[in-house]
Length: 62
Image (tube, rainbow, N blue to C red; front, side):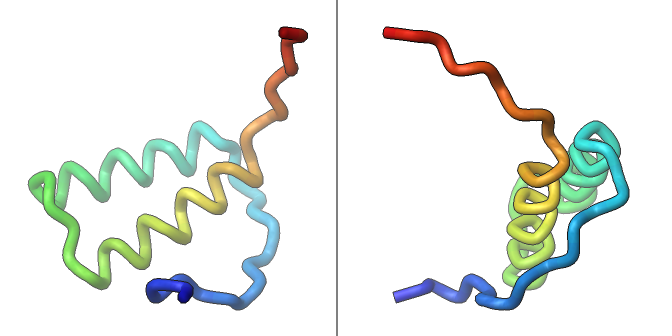
């Protein structure tokens, strides 16, 4: 079950991870800490955009 997550492919963002992160933070500030269904959908899209824009983290050996 997908639990309401979109299966459409989002285009790659031209924004930096920092820019997307700021939009995520603003969304939480506007919501007062509780996201509506519509805001959750926006949040999910933004998190995917942020992950795509974030530079890869180096992997440390165990």
